[in-house]
Image (cartoon, rainbow, N blue to C red; front, top):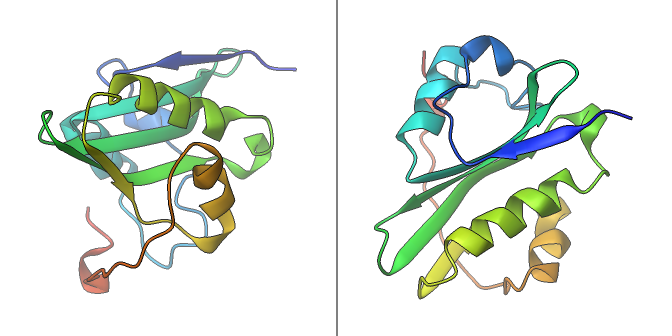
Length: 137
């Protein structure tokens, strides 16, 4: 079984380590733009397979660093799912952002239970998506 290491920076990550994410998205960011997203985030946690040096999971946070935070993306490569990587990524974010009043996430129904197990509550919300801008390159 592979060894997974975690880091809270994307500074040493290269776009070539980011293949295979955004599964099921009709359009998605290029690996170069994906790296920019991670590097521009207020917070990031990255899971790396030490045998292949590939990124196998990530979570990022947008925050004012004082009061609020938002988790826009959490993903684990399909072949690495079910191994606790997503839970560990959430735990690491919660440890870093524990002092905030609110940490919000909009998530797919399939991962609602995962977030609920980490103390998140289901609430009503609204989102606006501009799908023509989904494929940023």
